[in-house]
Amino acid sequence: MLHRRSGALFVYLMLVMALTGAAIAVVEASGPRPKTGTQATAFMGLFTAYLVVTALTTVRPPSTWSRRLGLLGVPLAAAIGVGLTTLGLRALTTTGNHQMPMLTAVELVFGSIALLAAGSDVRLLRSSSPLTGTKRIARHLWRMTFALWIAVFSFFPRLIKHIPAPFGAVVAVPILGVLGAMLYWLWRVRYRKSFRGLIGVAVPRSNAA
Image (cartoon, rainbow, N blue to C red; front, side, top):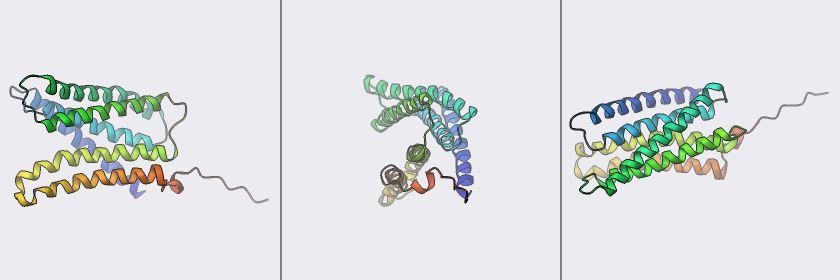
């Protein structure tokens, strides 16, 4: 019960943060002097919202509304992937482009991940049976944790200018920590199957004669 309530609160907070950030980025990108990276920020905000919603629907019982959200998520993730990849490729191929290489790498990497996520959704929607067992937990885990990692990756590097130079590397601790935790738990779920007792199908007890 505690995990469910805290998870729901996490989803709501992440949605507010991601959609607010995306809206602010859209407004800045449409201004007379848009800042570099505002378009990518808008896509990343939408991608974060998509990840937490699909992570939530993964662990909820299949229903009409969850399938509708899945159908809406496919074109959204595909559009995000195409948009980010296009921005990255345009930066690589445009002569005289002054975009930072780090931003270009982020656009290409996260665009590819969004396209892979859309493909995963298509396979799930076409499947005749819902996800169960470790695959279901792994899908929920990586999407929820990856959304958190995007938020951490977006926030902490901005603190570097407020931290003394000798301690600047401290901002990498939460970024690497969340990423490491995600990889560790995915390994435990998929390979060690540590959640076998929690996600297994309960066998009804037979009535005593």
